Amino acid sequence: MPALIFDCDGVLADTERDGHLVAFNQMFDEFGLPVHWTVADYAEKVLIGGGKERLASLLTPEFVARAGLPADPDAQAAEVARWHKRKTELYTALIASGALPARQGVERIAVEAAAHGYTLAVASTSAEPSVRAVLEHAVGAERASTFHVFAGDIVAAKKPAPDIYLAALEALDLRPDEAVVIEDSNNGLRAALAAGLNTIVTVSSLTVDEDFTGAALVVSSLGDPGADGFAVLADPDNIRPQGFVTIDAIDAVLAQTAPAAPTAPAAPAAPAAPAAPSTGGSDDR
Image (cartoon, rainbow, N blue to C red; front, side, top):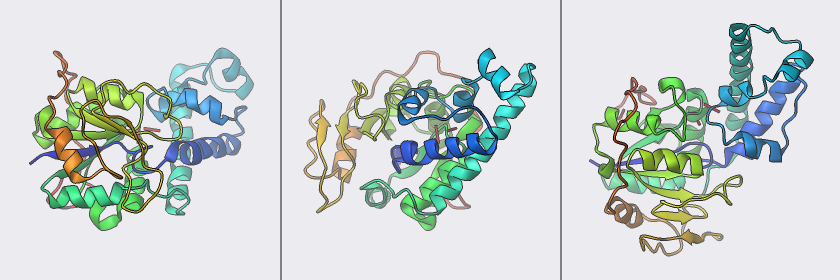
């Protein structure tokens, strides 16, 4: 049974600018930290895989002094974990409020893929509670319970390392040529390609200008029948979707020759549990 593996942030919902960035800045205010990220600032921070890692990038000697933080690295790491925990709570509440709509076509293609025998999964280095909140918001709680979820710190190396995808393939007992990934960023694409996975890219607000060389298909969104704004941005494998991405397009991507998998894959991580008890199995932002 093949798998369709979604990234979370930027794929299920365009969460970065209007979700994660907002939550980070709210958290900074709550903790009285001397920082406020602009959209331009955050466009650079998203190039760092992992929310705790993005927060740790603040810890210059100047920032530590201004914020009155301890000098001990372990104490600093504890502070970063505390900040990230609160940021995740703020972000999850924002998702629950309905402030961030699901991206076009996500629920439709999940329904179509399941009906055609695909296993559904999410592979993201976002914090697991954030991933589950976005997934339920995007496809509904019942369908979300059928997804396998691989998220957070189940792997040590975040995207663009392939570890999260290698962990998903191992847990699902699949070869790379038996899965298709949907990503939105260069980091995510590089991770998928390094794991030997054919990839569709649906660009998001912060990634539209990134390099997607190697993707089987690059589109503005997955699209929906009758909806405006769908565009094919790159189609090197001649998938040729008409108006929106269909299950036929997913099948066509699956049939492409997969990229060469890494010769020395990272050590496997323990798989995540499924979203809820079922027959099935963001970027830790």
